Image 1: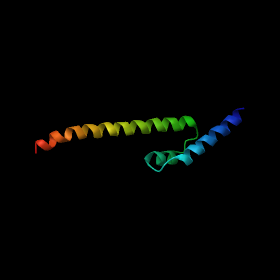
Image 2: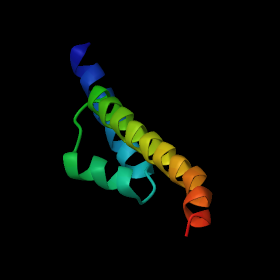
Image 3: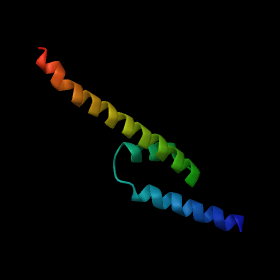
Length: 72
């Protein structure tokens, strides 16, 4: 039974790799070659956090930029 589960997990990891679109996340996955769904999940969570942090920073900069340009 454990062997069947291992084969199934390998299948899903390969399917995940093939289904990714080109971009930073897919590059990260391809370079690190996760061997399990858990590793994919961990990398995905880190990537989502980084994207959300970037979006937050850009939003703050966008809100601050009108104030900066008025002072010039």
